[in-house]
Length: 242
Length: 379
Ligand code: SF4
Image (cartoon, rainbow over all chains, first blue to last red; front, side):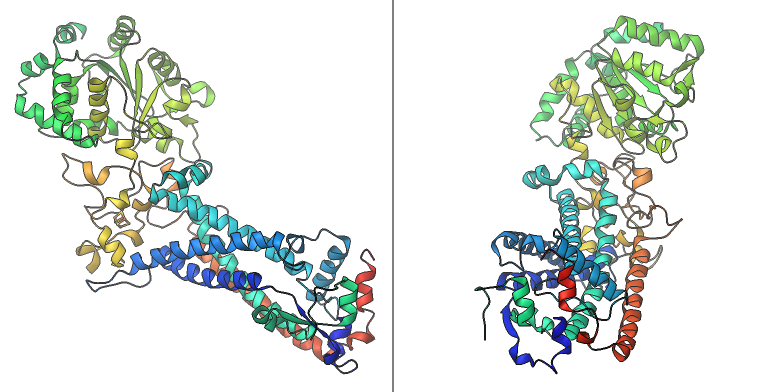
């Protein structure tokens, strides 16, 4: 897409191909994760340090916060399981290999992106799906989510006393003391916050640089890709052309 | 010593109680308390009473190593109708350094005699951690190391009861940096049968309940994965706390002595560790079930939890400090600082980007063509 950005002038965008990149399950999982993370962070900060002090006799603030926290935790788990299933069932840009730079090409594209972010290149390397650097970052986010889920379930197990849950996660408190699990569970939230800031910034940035409609694509699923780029990626029949 | 103890050994428990002037009413009251503590249905009171009346008093040896004697104190501080009184009567307490009249070689002789005469039949109660560093020299009694005595006594015992945090997992003795290499009994003497009664100190009601269970059913109560009896350590304190309604409602003490504190609101923000502690403290309570820490206005420090000195401190903060960041740096500060740093870096990048867009050549004019990207790749 090198050609892309520049080249609105030379090559009109009308000639670019509208490609269905993000399938519905990918977009849904994305937005459910976003929603859950926002809700979980807010309720989590409250549970850590209850900043609303209720005075009325009828209030049920902490009870409500905890209920929402636990429930959205389970929604997040479900969304993540769904997304992991889609690693194998989804289209080529949803697959698991998009998140780890296995091929030489993806590694070099990753280096290219790092150079771009580090002001060592003028332009970013174009990609149809995730660029490999972003993919690796999402891989780290998935890892952090798994840690959050495991520590969260272990903390929940501590108060729930359910045998099934206990046999699933009870071993964790033997390995790492409950209090350190709590610290990890709380500390990782900030990493999501930091990630969110960077993620939104880079999405806007790359969307502008590529002019591929990247920002729209997480709502609609469609990106605009130069024909050159498409043929290079060997995308054939599965592309929807408009 | 032995002359005083021996005749009573021959008495059944019932007779021994009569000799000591404990009437049946008091005795049955004790039995009901024990049944309640053990979380058994009330119908067991009769069974417990019958069993305790007829049983021959078990011989008990109380060992004390690296500790503050707080568990002995806790046992003795109960008042009438006293669990301690009952326990002391229920058992033939043959050796207890703090309580016994004899000392020096006489005391030692008692211990040796008890072990010789009752091999495999006495119960050993251990209080205090056992230091293992430098061959165990940091705790010696009569020239013998704690580990030496514990190994001999506990291996010959029917069962060992570890009372208090120190005997369970090393307690404060084992707390970082643990210069004496202190550990709990279970770890110091592997392969013995131990019932751990963690807590700083242990609650004598629970210890009495364990013994009552043993005397009635001839086996130790069901244990959890830390070998602690489930009846005492099976439930989270937070779920039994009388301030719990304030917690759920969101009414928290903000400062010691503030309005909320005076009104008995939840101590969560003052660092109460009730949510991560399992113990029956709120129901059994202390000083004859008068009160317990949270009821008296101080947060729980989770003293019955594993390695609590290290893992539950700071006692007045919610979660532990992060290692390597100095003293008193909470996770939240590090987290906010990190988020701030990323925000700053992102802003800086944005400024850099704005400058770059002013100067850079059009993409096709640079060497960075799409081909360039792929060339380094496979095709
Ligand atoms: S005082 Fe402690 S144990 Fe009681 S409800 Fe509050 S946090 Fe839980």
